[in-house]
Length: 147
Image 1 (spheres, rainbow, N blue to C red):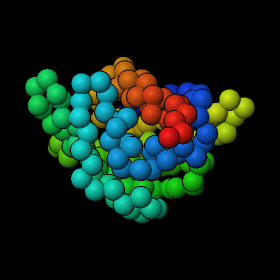
Image 2 (cartoon, helix red, strand yellow):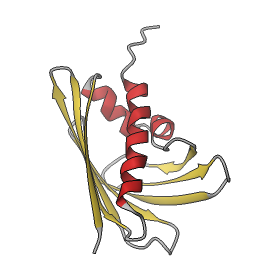
Image 3 (spheres, rainbow, N blue to C red):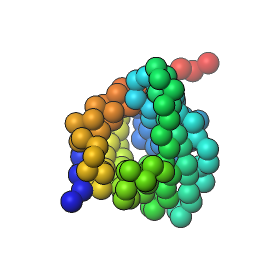
Image 4 (cartoon, rainbow, N blue to C red):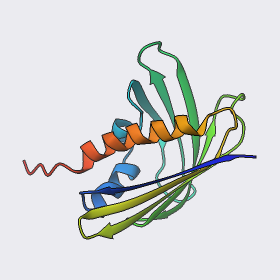
């Protein structure tokens, strides 16, 4: 049996900018790690069927965990479907993350569904991590800086 979480947000930023934050490896490394973690992107071939690998380092204790996956479906400014698999054999299985993007009056609506979370990871920890990541995503995409 696998765990699933769903998250919904409205961001005050255009859909192309929000999508770019998911498709640009440097941007993703900026906002994806929850508070207290540093992200390293090892590879990032952003195309359907392309693979990626990343790792998080806990800044406090320097413990690392890594994972990788495949970009299963890419519809610019509309949809991303990504597979994720931890490198740690104690976290078995493959997760699927589906992100939908929709232009709305005030910016962009995003819906995130993460399926197949290993049983030993409490879903509340996934929710907490995503909430922190989305705070950082908001701080990246919402400012209008024209310099």
